[in-house]
Amino acid sequence: MRTAIPIKERDKARKIIDIILLVFFFINIIFICYMFDIEQLVVSGVDHTINWPLDASEYPIWPPKFIVDLNHFVGTFDKALLYRDPWWQATIWIDVILFGPFYITAIVAFIKGYNWIRIPSIMWATMMLTNVTIIFIVEFTDPKYAGGQPLPIIAANLLWILMPILLIIRMALYPQTFAGHRLGRKLVELDS
Image 1 (cartoon, one colour):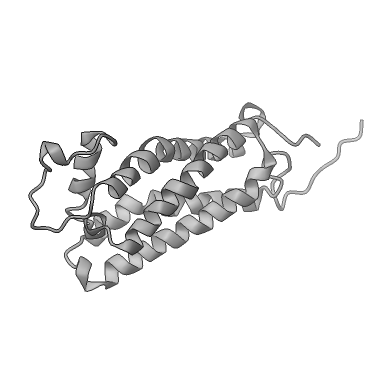
Image 2 (spheres, one colour):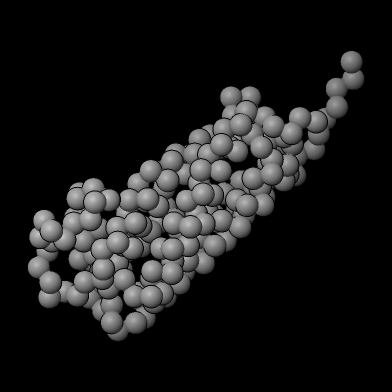
């Protein structure tokens, strides 16, 4: 059995799911990890009395100004994003240090069809669901973040709930990841 099946050779169902996941991984590596998340590490937390937008001297070299402004705009309804408490920064460091390299690795593995990506994918998905759960619990129960708007917060984080669930389902349905058949399907051998 082949151990690497490139995306162009996969069955239609797997190919569609894998393309959706690849788009998500690309968005995360290009925009989220090393732009939005970096902004939250290099620009210190703000309170709601500080005027926004920032003065020109307060903008970092990286990420671009529009990312800083967008993060601060999102912070108007997602208070934790502006306060940047230690628990929040811990989730951001996990994103930058662990998830960023995972996205790069996953992009290569999903395109080339390397089956070994199955366990790291499940690990990423469970860690991501854990992070988002922690974020929701703190943001919706801590009075410090009162005034945050639950629906926009949930909407802003929805992809980081749905994509890990999709990835877990994808890995559960195809235990051999790219090489094998879908779980639960009976293989029919044709006699030659």
